[in-house]
Image (cartoon, rainbow, N blue to C red):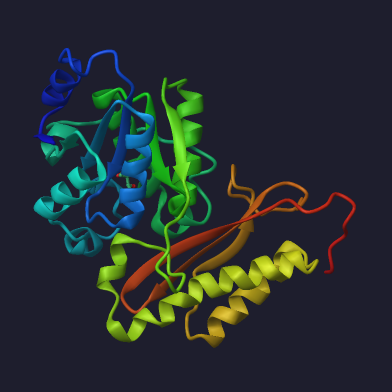
Length: 289
Ligand code: PAF
């Protein structure tokens, strides 16, 4: 696996005779690779001729400078794991490559980026994501880009971006990878205090409760109430627990269409998110209030 640090370098690497004209898969990451990322790299390896993994801790998507400073960074470990999972090229640009001096361009996806994560983290968060993802797509020119379902609202923002700009890339969404006890894998999990690790399960338990309430016939707002109450009994207060339309992230009303239960909560010093797809209900069925 080769490491490339510049946009010029990645373009050159991808136009060499052994890479030109072949199907390119991109796995965009901020490093601190875990099984979730590795499942994306393996999926890219199965589908594509050339697998590029980008590692860039994108400063513009952090609303909290403390969170940016505390973000785990270990290039050697990431390179080792990416290579073992099947990456051909590791793209590790520095901040000046992605945001050259005087940089003044932002890509902003309205609508889907505004509720929930957008409201909690500020509009700048998804502007930062949309901007860096656009830059990565332009630098690498992937045929397919791989994202995890775990960051469901990010996926919806990227899908909107690709549709609106008619970008010639297919977005592949891979399932959330979980620890054996159900905790969604996240680069932030390493920062959980051992005493908080067990409490972190409250997110998945709250989602399961909301999904079970819907299966039992509850209306979406009642399912949210039950999921939230369950989390509170486990000592975790959600910032939100919501049942939403997976394309718009607005409250789901019609449960005969696919919906998504989403949650965010601080557990100790660490903010975690998770989600659970809710399959469509039979059209004839009515809600309990
Ligand atoms: O999901 C992430 O790690 C980041 O948001 C991404 C897509 C790499 C953009 O910085």
